[in-house]
Length: 278
Image (cartoon, rainbow, N blue to C red; front, side):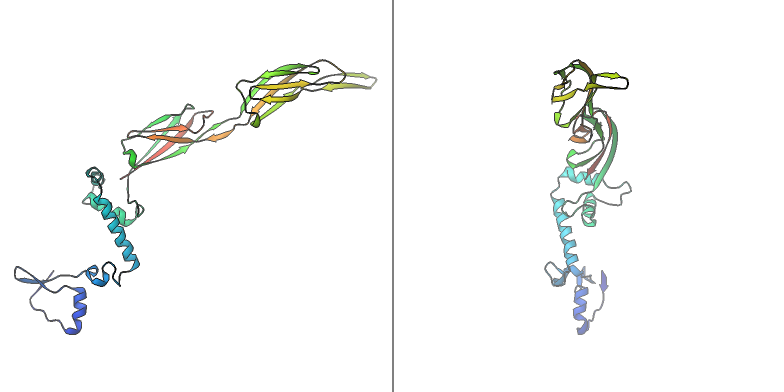
């Protein structure tokens, strides 16, 4: 404030004076002149003709964050106070809260600031349900990001069998397979050949798949003029190969539990990032 001893304002400057300064006031019989801030002018106040759109946006942000702070409990305000930097560049948790909201570190709708970030990497077994130990957090104010994966490999079953002429054989499968995604390979043949002086003929046959269901493979052998037994090997490839990703199960104060979306073939390393907000 400026102390006033004498004051004479030309009439042509009166309006400019009033816009910049308040009329002098007295305190203990001494007159003072105080700055009149722009937002105290009627045209700069809420709804005033000179309020710019950008100004109104900033004012709305301030009011929104102020009203949000007023709703905080004592425990929530204490979190903001505790988050003040060690060098105490902010005096109060309120300042921290307001600056975050006004500076745009969080969205306008949810002003918030990161309190801590933890990264933990562990091997997750095929059985899943892995608990990651973390430093104490408030689960209601945390976001967990998960990186890593395992895989499921193709399931292969192999064996050998035989089938007689004009008959079939059933082969039990364990474990069961999904016929819709399974491929069968057979190797083997049988027959006879009659060669004399470089000429002659023969009769050959090979086994074939006649049916495949979840727990059984059926192989048949059909020949027209020769009977015998065909020995063969078989292979079933159940095409299940895919990448398997971890999923979040729960977040507690000192632990994050994850599981596999599907049971993988092998264990996999998974990293979690726990972000706690104020």
